[in-house]
Length: 223
Ligand SMILES: Cc1cc2nc3c(=O)[nH]c(=O)nc-3n(C[C@H](O)[C@H](O)[C@H](O)COP(=O)(O)O)c2cc1C
Image: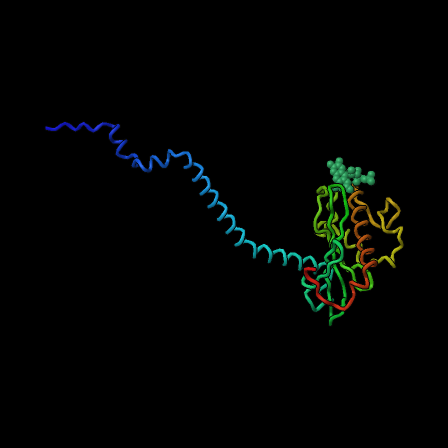
């Protein structure tokens, strides 16, 4: 009877890839080629992911912008979409609210520098230069100390409604500790001081560019 001389080594050799494949795998170019292919696949999948989320993200931003604008310019003041009626002045993008083609209010960002860095305030102003609303969009102030500037935490920011440069003496545009009319927060004066300054500067920007801001409504989006 013929003896089966198949050894373990032979069994392994039977599973081994054919010589051409072995040559390819041992070729020094092989790892580089594989790495390149993986990188290409990863880049393609990232690119596809970016493209797929681009639209929804842009739509989300547009919704957020419309929601913020409606907090600083009441909807009853306009029959247009202020987020789509923009004007570029210097570094500022100005959103204009119009009714029957007449500008009834504008909104733009104004920035102050607090304890934690930049505080971005969206300021809505009517055609006479009076504040329609102010909301802090971004800040890095300390929770529990400086975050009372957020409308969701405190009414403090509502204290600016209706004020204007004409109707409020210059010395009043400061926190009480500095002789002004605005409350500081207990243990936190830097933050409200920065917001008061940013809002006053916003009103000064309005006063400087009033003619252009209130000129017959025309969209300058992207200019
Ligand atoms: C950890 C830490 C965080 C603080 N965060 C804030 C802040 O967010 N806003 C602020 O106005 N002051 C903050 N303060 C307090 C300020 O350093 C400062 O004492 C306070 O604003 C009073 O300012 P004044 O001396 O000008 O009145 C913080 C202090 C510490 C120690």
